[in-house]
Length: 345
Image (tube, rainbow, N blue to C red; front, side, top):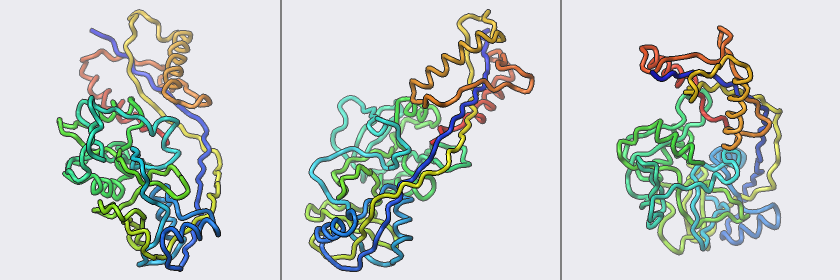
């Protein structure tokens, strides 16, 4: 009978969160989008850029107006690009916004991405209806990935996820792609993920992928190439750039560094040594195993200054033996899953 060993790691490190807060300014002068852009560039920085939902809500609060249509800095460009619905620079490490796992022969037609049971991605019309996966990054929740078994268009799925969780799921690397497959039974049906294709660009050339379109928008009208935000609902439509409306400018972002915070994460794992006679109580053996785990985690992007140590159990031991197939194994598996924590952002 194969011998399984359970072990617990303590991963800890300091990080300094910071937020770049745009300073928004409501201009009650009704002009075309181009004139609004010129005014903002002359008197402030540019027409408003919005980085995420928190930024959007703060814009509405700081502007303090209601029931107005307002120009913001989003305008239709010439080239198409794939983006993730969940925007935010701190959410992605270098290169993670570019991760793709397309099936052979894709992408083809369609501006929204689906994930299949096999973990491969396809694209189709955003107006199709499918089940979808939300990402929940709220503190205190045990669910990172939430499968919603309701058929919705991509934009309606996005709205649902933002209202009830955080956003449509982003898949940042192959590890997450596999993790989603393992955690959620897709039952053979394709599901929406947060990847979408568009040609909209910000006036200040920001790379923000955040969009908050009103259902049915952006419309396919080729002459409606500028973006209006309704101040009461915060949702956006595309409109004729020559129409006149009030608008929002912004000043340079203000960096607000916070105090360093210590993050601790406890991870419970299981392993099967190739050498069944290996003495796991030997400190030298434990150090060698721990160093190998550190190296693997760093390969997957763990910051170099993060500490990885053993977490001893009340009996003082690091490793606990469990015979595979024993009556206690199922309960041990449940304990392990409960102790696994989601990735800290």
